[in-house]
Image (cartoon, rainbow, N blue to C red; front, top):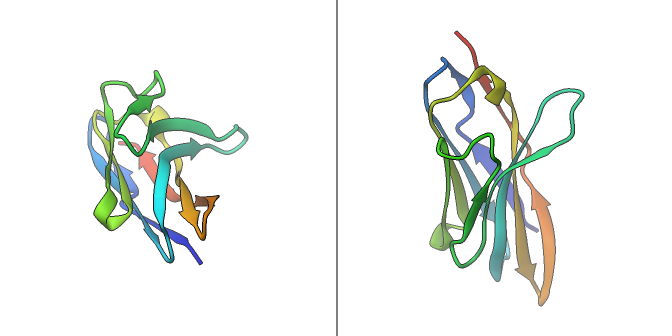
Length: 119
């Protein structure tokens, strides 16, 4: 069984920084895509950042230049470094991975971590 354990959320003032981590544990052969999403009440979950197995990254326009996604393949962990945070970045952040187990790919989600940007 595979689990994603997120950490790093919290309360931060506008202009501040936070670093989210998401570690995948269990019987994993390899991981393809790793992503961060966010969701606010009453709205659809939004893709924030994406990184593939080759290190290619992509970002939502709203976070370009402020957020950086990275991964440590040896630790099966994905990170989201968030800087210059704004009140509109307030949301629950979820990590997602597409991981191979026993010859097949599966989608896995983290439990979510709250990020609140407020003075």
